[in-house]
Length: 540
Image 1 (cartoon, rainbow, N blue to C red):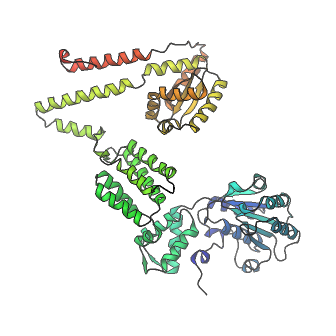
Image 2 (image 1 turned 120 degrees about the vertical axis):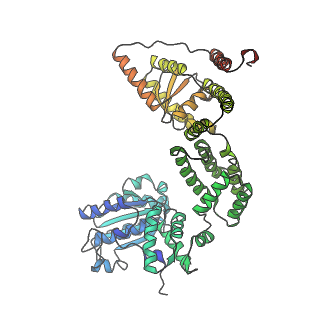
Image 3 (image 1 turned 135 degrees about the horizontal axis):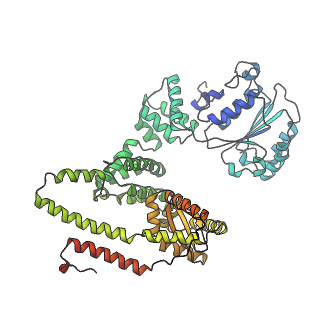
């Protein structure tokens, strides 16, 4: 049988053909150039990212008689007979994982290489070795003969004992980008005269999940079933979902088209599309829309907050799925929540400009009617603002924290806060505080920072809830306040200046919650009296 599968046929034979691992390759090439070959290497990373291929190219290069900047010359006697070279020993630890196999290696490494400068042992899936086999390998890795090089490869670096890792130079291979996989596939299809659409190539690169071997295997399989490969062929054979389908799904949500949405979801299920692929692609679509929502004032889709909430809810589905729950039911129910969401009124810069243009053409009666509606909006917005934490309380808590702020308090609260966040079960609170840092603390108050203005405001509106959870957990009576990083930098500069001027901070009593609420009611009454007839207003 002369036919060779594509991933074997296009296995790299020099460093320039290894895709997507430029940093690691540059280190290995410099090691060869400067003749600084280590006695042991460990290559870790996902499947199909080039670990074993790199190990073979490196083994060939260090024994090459005329190495070049790309590694082995592939022309000398050593390179030509590399596959039959008795000094290059490949071992699959998955099927040779016992201590006897390792002892055989230990006995053989004492012998000098028969044909080469180095005797190279490539141990694939090294994490599969037994504990006793690792122990037997340990001393050999510590002080092997000068003519021996070990290259260990693994997809599960966590399972390799630290004692082994500490004796090796470690190289972490990462998933290959879609762009790099596509470029390599284009090279292959050109050489093999395979007819394929660019969309199909991109989809193959996507579903291969960063693995070049998987991408070549998929291409190989499809090339034998059709004359021209289209994106539909990829989707039907491998249970994927196209970008167009994801875009259509999102627009059905915006259009509130429940019937077509339900039909589309059922089609995905019938095609046995992996729900994880569907979620992953939906999250990518949400990211794209969220960026548009932030940078484009004319954007008319879901709001950023709605998109963010949708993303977290979809990501959570994987945690709920088990053998008795259909993931597609959860996905469909989650997405149905956002139907009609984009029809809610939104205040944007574009809308305000549009309103101003319309007012120029309105009659005095229409303008008066609209002003009345706008005034009612002002009241509702004022209520929202006055119900949020006020600036006075922020200033008081920052001041009170500085009264007795110390590093020892800061370190203690930092440790407690990390434990608090790591074990917080309330997901709504967790989403708010997960990115917060404790930047100052006294024996009574801690200051939190967050890079996003809006998040700091939301945290301050939830202070009672956060403090109750925190204090119940640690039997404490701590108070918190949240600032943006910019605001914290301002407060810090002022604090340092005050210290230099020998200013002493004095503790300030916080206003009672009832007084704040009364003040809010007074504000609401004042606004209402300014707009409506005082005799016909009742404030509850």
